[in-house]
Image (cartoon, rainbow, N blue to C red; front, side, top):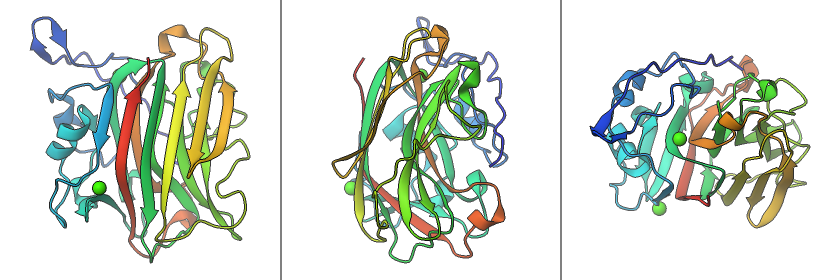
Length: 288
Ligand SMILES: [Ca+2]
Ligand SMILES: [Ca+2]
């Protein structure tokens, strides 16, 4: 997939009052995306930085776009939102994955600045439309970015960051969720799936609602005393000690990711049809 270059956010500061500046650290690693036209505008917003988020999209009108302003109201300081691919559908958030497109050009790659913490958990539900084309697979759902928040073929080997996300993947004989994790000790350039999948045999079903839970704990120093846990429909898919970073200045969980797109970078990850993925009942909680 595309290599997402880090971007220096500069020293832009947004001060709500003299004693409170909401701009995150300039060392935050922001994915620079060709289609991220809203970055400049959202970067100067005064949206809040939250330690908990809870959203069920029930208050919005069926069939309406879910706008940047609404996303800011619900998530706080979010960037990369794409309202043209976001719609409210019967109290769900529906994301469109455009045909013949990959990564941010066809989906949504958004990031929410959350209160930095060493321990977070989240849960949400996800459902593929009944006519969804699995293609090869892609990233989906909410996740966490630790330190520099490494993704996109930029491994966490320098000890400065990692990420925990979920993929759906079609290996040709079955379709499943698997972990997709960047961290200091990852074995390859791309995210590690730890050899885990859900379901462990058989395939995901279109039209079925799945409940995803994630838990992440930062490690300290060079110790492998962090934690990564993923539970789907009550089944523990992954629960492992992990060394996210080896730099204590980068050890904290800084951002909530919302990455929903096809890819991979090769064209066989594409689909010839638009696809829809539905999300609901998001709860994000800082534990410490
Ligand atoms: Ca709902
Ligand atoms: Ca943060």
